[in-house]
Structures are given as structure tokens and as C-alpha cells.
Length: 352
Image 1 (cartoon, rainbow, N blue to C red):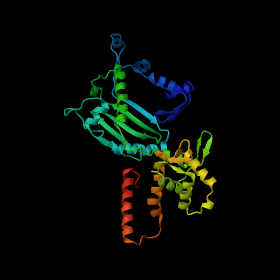
Image 2 (image 1 turned 135 degrees about the vertical axis):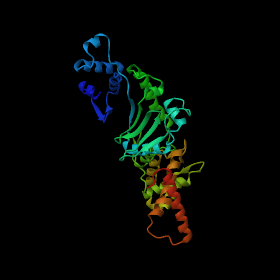
Image 3 (image 1 turned 90 degrees about the vertical axis):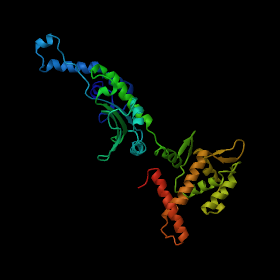
Image 4 (image 1 turned 180 degrees about the horizontal axis):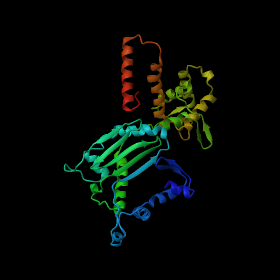
């Protein structure tokens, strides 16, 4: 296919034995679909005419011919990731949470075949970690599905059929369309059966959106950077009004923000407060109450403010302290906090 794309002057970016990107995906797919049983047989017959033939002319005149059969067929689905740097974390999480894929009840979902005690083969899930690229293997009789993170850029799912009789299909080349349907369906079913218990780093999009500048209808607002003292004062103040049914006013919010920063109200002007409220509003953390001068916290704002306040106050600031904890009760409390934090990091798979 790559050679045909080159001959047709179709630009593409290769990915090992696949295509990573092209500006004409429809045309590339049409070329790929032309690989069928008839074309394979035509290539085989072409070379039989050019190479020494095992059959003598008399044999060929009598009608003896070679017929192609399928010894092995591989059907692959390569999904290129738009964010490769999180792809490895995503795939490793897939492995952790789907180690039961090789069980009979899961295997029959993937291959759409009934599995009983009489079904031959070993039903298992194998995780191979040769080198630094892990791979997931699920077996069904003599066939298997393999999944791995391809060159750090794509998720590769491939079904290899080593015996067509595993699916009650003959080995003749004319059965290739039926095997193709089975192979690609198995790839899709594997992705459907796999599941994750959390968003696997996709939630960092929300954090990036808050911490970077935003443009909303030609209105630009600066980012709310984690670790900035002024930003954390804003987040703590938002937590104070999380349950306020009527929201808050400019003046009320300003008082709390100045206190949390340890500043005099004279050093924090109303203009600066207006600027910060505008930042919070354009980032979607607060919204203006209709027909009033009051603001209220949004659902997103409550989550972000709580995250900023709790993580900084309860984890980063105590952990970064260089002073030893002298009080025995305080030290025990900190040890419990450390154990709870370690357990949380283990749960979300980001422990060291």
C-alpha cells in the first residue's frame, strides 16, 4: 500500500507497517480494501508463469493446478493517539484492569463463540514485558489477539487466526472475506470489553484549561496557576461560598481574599478584585446571577477550588516543610496522612 501511495503521489506519514497520518484517508482506505482474495491469487499466478513450475506441461494440460490456502491471517486495527505522551499510561492501565480477559466468559465475548468445558486450548491472559513495551495476549484455541502500544504513538490491536477451523471455516483462499469479518470484529469486541475505572490522565485537560490563559468570545483571561499565592487565596475564598444559596458580592469576596493573602485591603484594589472575578468567570468557575451584581460558584468551580485548596494545604505544604514535627500526636496524624496519600496514589496508579 505504501508503494501504491508513493506511485499515486499521495502524501502520507508511515508508522512502521502502517500509516500514521495522511490528508487523504478515504483514498488510502480504498487502496487498502483492494487487497482481496482475487488479487492475491492473481499475484501468485503471475509468479507461477515466471518461475520453474513443478507440474510438467502434460500435467497442466490435464487440469492439475495449485490452489492457495490460508495458513495464517492477521487483521490489525491501529488507532493513532492524538496525545502520545499519555498513551503509555493509558495502555498500562488497560493491562492492569483487564487481566481477566482470558477467562472463558470474556473470551467468548471477544470471539463471539460459545466456550464450554470441551473447548480445547488454554484460556489465559498473558502480559509480556520484553524490553520496555508491554503487550497483552488473549488466546482462543490456536488463534489469539495481541494488543500493544506501537512506537509510543498508537494502540495496536491485532487478531491472528492460525487455524481457520477454529471458526468452522475452510482454509481455501476464497474464505478470506469471512475470516476478515471475524478478525476485525474480534478487534472491536476486545476494545468494547476492555474498561477503565477512571479517566486515566484525561482529567489533566481540565487542569491545563484552568492553569493556562483562555479566550472566550474575544475576551482573554490569564491562567490560574497552581502554586500562585494569589490564586490559592481565590480558591480558598471560593470554598467559603460553596454552600451560599444567594452567592456573593464583589465586596464580600474581596474581604476574604485579602485576609487569606495576609494583606491590607488598601493594597488590593477593587480593580484587582474585578480582574480576578473576570478570570474566574471566563474559566467557568463562577457565573453571574442574572439581573444582579452577585456571583455564584459553578459545579466545575467547586471541584477545582476544592482540589487546589486541599492538595496545597493538606499535602504539598506539610510535605515540603523542612522542620521536624515535634508533637507526638501531630507526628502520628501526619503519618496517617502520609499513609492515606500513599494509598490514594497507589489507587490511581501514580505511585513511585
